[in-house]
Length: 80
Image (cartoon, rainbow, N blue to C red):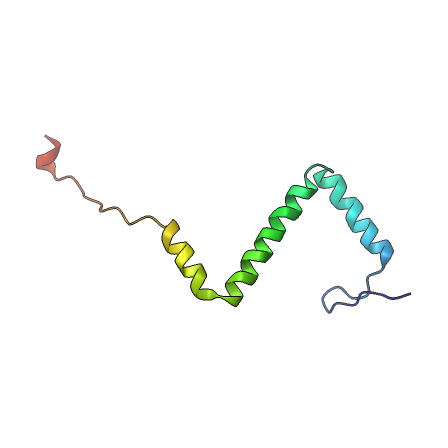
């Protein structure tokens, strides 16, 4: 039998994977899991895009950020 052997997990087999999946289903429920996976997929995709083309991420962030508003404090004379 072949084991998945990532450095941070040690030896993990089919039984361990099934137990982890069962715990996830119990905590989040069957309806919430696709939404969680979709969000994780978007995050991974955005991360990969940013790694491949960092300049494109700067342009996106620049459009989303609003121009800073000029803050002005009222003087005591203006309050009257």
